[in-house]
Structures are given as C-alpha cells and as structure tokens.
View (cartoon, rainbow, N blue to C red):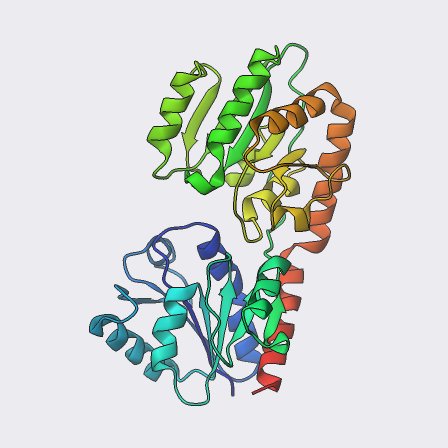
Amino acid sequence: MTNILHAMLGKGLGGLEQVFLDYQPILEAWAARHDGRCVGVVRKGGKVAEREAGRTPPLVPMAAFTDWDPLTLAAATGVVRAAAPDLILSHGQRPARVFGKVAPAGAIQAVCLHKPSFEVAPGVHYLAVGRHLARLAIERGARPDHVWFIPNSVKAPSAQARPFSRGEGASVKIVAAGRLHVKKGFDVLIRAVGKLRAWDFDVTCEIAGEGDERADLEALIKELDLDPCVTLTGWTDDVAGFLATGDLFAFPSHQEGFPLTLLEAMSVGLPVVATEIDGPDEILKDGVNGRLVPDDDPDRLAEALGELISDREVAGRYGAAARTLVLDEYGPGELARRLEAALDGMLSKA
C-alpha cells in the first residue's frame, strides 16, 4: 500500500495551480493501483478550493498563513496524521517547508519546481517542469538521481485558430494571455504594437488576464495613444477559445518555468513569437515552429511579428508545426507516463 499527500497552498488559479490539478487524477489513479490513496491538499479560502468544492474525491482545504506559525503547523500535522503518507509531493516552496517539518519518519519528500527561486534540501526529490530547472537543482546540490524532468502538458483544445482568415482588409489580431505582472512583459508587447502601428501595420491586440500591473499597463496604453487598438480583456475560463480568435500569439515574458499559456497557444495552431528565455526556448525552435526574440526588446518583437504578418504562408506553417508538436509531445498521456515513471523511480530509491 502506498499513500500520497499532494499539496499546493497557492491563493490563485495560475500555472502552478493548474499543474497541481493536472497531477491530481494521475496520482489518484497511481495510488489506487498500489492499494493506497492520494490526498490532495489546497489552501483554505484559495481559488482552487472554491472552484473544486464539489470534486470527487474531495480536496482537503487547509489553513496556511506562514511557514512556521502554530496554526499552519497544527493543520499540517492533522492532515499528515489522517493521510499517513508514504510520499509527500509539494508544489512550491511553502508547502515543501510546512510539510517537511511535520513529515512522518521514512516518508519520501518531493517538490515540483515551477520557477528558479527554490532551495535544495538533502534527500528530497525534485520534479522539474523545465530542463533548466532540473539543471539548477543539480547545481544547487540535489542528487542527479533525485531530479526528474516532467514538462507541463495541456489537453487537446476545444477550439482551433484560423490565422488571417477574416478576409481582405481585416486588422491583424495579436493575442496574449497571462497574469498582469511585471515579469510577464506585457509592457514590451504594448510598445511593440505601438511600433507596428507606426510602421503602418493594421494590428490590434487583446491581452487576457488580471493582476497588479493593470493600472500601469492601462496608463502605458493611454501614453502611447493605443486605446483604440490595445485591450486588456480580463481573465477568461475559456483560454483556448480566446486564443483561437487571434492571428498571432505574442509571449514577451521575462521569466518562466515551462509556460502553459505558450503550450495552449501552440495547441490551437497560432503562429507564435516568444522571448528567447529558459522555458520557451525548450519548446520553440526558431524558424521551425515559431519565432524567438531577445528579452525586453520591443523593436525585435515588433520586427518578428511584422515579418509573420508580411509572410502569412510561413506563419501558417509555424502554427501548424507548433500544434503538431504540442499534441504529440505535451498531452495528458505523456504527462501521466512521465509522472508515473518518476513515482516508480522515487519509491524504488526509498
């Protein structure tokens, strides 16, 4: 019998939370095959707890204030006693630290790495969503045989893009999506759109998402006189449907793990221009299934978007190649295969 405690204490509903939700049914099925169970633990009052309230089997909501306060540690102790885990898999540093303090003797501890800011602890296994994160874990002291590369995945989309199909004279629509945060680089995209307009490209841009940077981005749109053509549309539950309305997808982020939104845009068949940083450069091959441009460079981003607008046949080939890649290599089946192999490997080293 093998029991798993699967923990994620994030407040929102972003990439980390989605990966947790993607893992949960795989872990439940694997544990059941080993005569055990997987208990999913989420932050009480968080968006995942709210959205998944009617789930079967239910997720366990847990109070989480800091890594050390007595209420959080008492709640974690109660969860551990009820779950009796042989393996604790945490998403992010907070649950890893909390449950590391109350883990039963002999329990295997694993952490899913989503971004470069993490600490390495002796004996812990690391599930890295990007190869660059796996390399970082080893450089920081993790044992190589305790590091597992498990890239993120997306389901086959409910919609498919038809780039440049709105007819002669229609504006080219650039789409982007993500949390409105400075590291996502949406200010770079807005400046790039301004340059495209100055170069007489008839383009519009819609950015789906919410976050603390909304006011700054709105101010930049006004400053550049782009109110008629750049829209912050808010968040949407139908990301694939939103993306499929576009002709091009721009991904100007400054820091990523293995970005789900990029995978989603590729899966609907959109031609993509992304920043050449760790994460996207593991997915895209420049000139084969998309374009990669330097970080924080609105001129180069605008140039690459303009080139695809001017050569729509090439853009269409990139979009088709991107869709094939994601559906073949980054679907739920591949995620299950890789995650189950990591579980088998971790337990064999116990």
